[in-house]
Length: 180
Image (cartoon, rainbow, N blue to C red; front, side):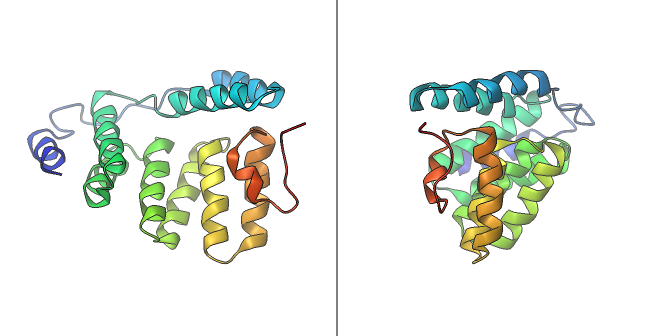
């Protein structure tokens, strides 16, 4: 937490760029990875496609937004959700048009069992990137946790339609997606 606070206090967007540049256009690369996931014959091949999707989603618009995301991911891995939220709040304020900032902030809300703000952040992420498989999956899981099982099931089915090997497919009734 100290490192996160120190970095946030020493560096600011004013020291980086004044305005966050547009997020990279990942649509063509995402098309390929979705096709790869849908064509995958094994879980391992599907997992590789998802790993590559995560790399696309994490492609930061600039150095500052990438540093904020890195800090937040480090804090999440350490279960320091307060520290993660500091970086993510800064990230979505600085770079509101980058879906991954919203998605990761939603994840922290979800881990804290703050489902309403998680859902709001997921909806923002999906407005920016409608085929964000992790955000779709997260929205489905969040809705289910909120007791909105039918809605959650429908959203999770949308995620599984894009990536049939998502582990969350096992939560669907009846199960959907791979294996074939």
